[in-house]
Length: 304
Image 1 (spheres, rainbow, N blue to C red):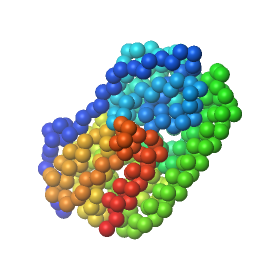
Image 2: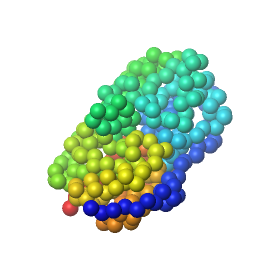
Image 3: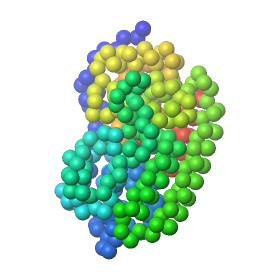
Image 4: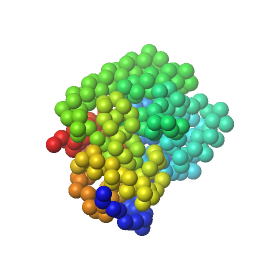
């Protein structure tokens, strides 16, 4: 068994948090839909087009567990016609503002309430909020968002929203088929996933992967691994013969690289866009592009 020495300071230096500032200018004469994460923001924008202003609070390359908003954005949340959030505890740094909007009577849709959530681990009471890694579940989200817009956003063209939702659902089914084909080429002995923190539960459930473990325990990037957590992960990586670890774009790969260096693991570190979209042209500027980029990188990274 490989031993791993404590490296708390190294990990502390590897964990960086994104900060969100600024605010989009209001669009006069249109209803306002506020969306917390940029993944859901892209989906909502595809459904409503120009019928409403979509204010996405989370900037590209941010961490959904810890991003911040400006005072002006916090005020606009309270004037929204509809708020679409991820839910299931994802937006930890934004919960106070969401609770205030709910108390003020702003119509709200938490996407995590319309899907069948998975626990982080067998027997766990904590729901995994990373459902977007399964495009089939995102079809349910699209249907729920369309219904919420039709019900709560005054002046929205219900027929147009329904048509856009149907078109986007067709794209999601095509994405699901592409992912199924790409992953089918990976042998059963190589279908093992390790990442910064637990983000692949839904993808694993949909496409028959095994989540070996994560460097950060639990589902939040705000948690911190102990020496025993890391030793257990090293042992699991050894036992499964894992040769590739996936690092998230919202977190630097130094965290998993430190794990590899300190434990003497011979693994490759491959970056994925798992919790945030990227800037335009950087490989994940839309949800569909993000998923296709990740599919290609996972398929390549896990192939012998």
